[in-house]
Length: 339
Image (cartoon, rainbow, N blue to C red):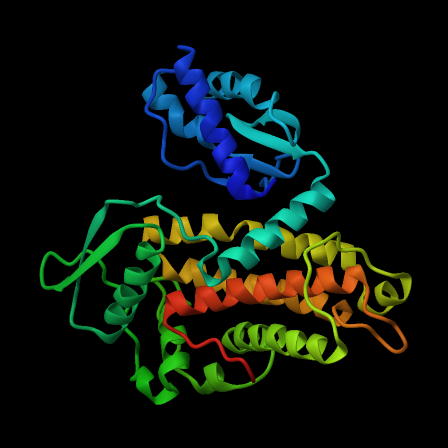
């Protein structure tokens, strides 16, 4: 079960609770499902009970308990536990394998549009900015990010200004279009951006380089695999002993990559709702670091023949590449095929 499918399952549980008179609320358009935070359990969690508590006139824990009774009867869900003030945590049947396969397939099917949704459908957001280059770039990114969630941004200049990021201290145009946009978008709006040549260096210390390099490497892996005669196929990602000895704790690296990919829709929705393209930029760095860690075992080594595990790892790498390309596109930055 993918996060998208689990989100729809949660909404169905809310609808059943409403139909049976247990909750008196409007069924929301979307339920956010993400890997559990500190103190959470299982494979995924949702805060839907906290979201519905006030309109339902009930404590969040009571709402969570009502929904729990509907969710435990769902195919593919191995267990449902309520933690904290009302977070609903899910354990999925075969989560280590089938959920990873389903997530990879979902991303490859959606491509760069993975994570797009309708959380802001029908909403028009009025953004008023000063005549400043950073404000212009942030607003331009917001147009695309909000659009990815079904909303629309109308940008205008003049008072009352409601989007005023700290201006750049120097002219960012000297960095070139991609590095300039990253320099203005990666810091939070209240932080002063650095307009330095550090954004141009091709080494690990440069977050933009890591993101673009990771994307280019996923494309190179696909080309290399084609030369070796195999193609991606979502499947159970298992690591042979020799590969694990070279690459380190691959299982942990793979789990980390799956978690950040599953979290991408939540990051996009939050960036749109809170007008924070910087949170998307930082998430892309996390995705890049996670996929770079698993790359050493994607292709066969030495006399190895391409196996189902290699095809599965290639599919996972391509899924990460799609997320990086989609995120960079929303920021208005090129995702290179070669670097």
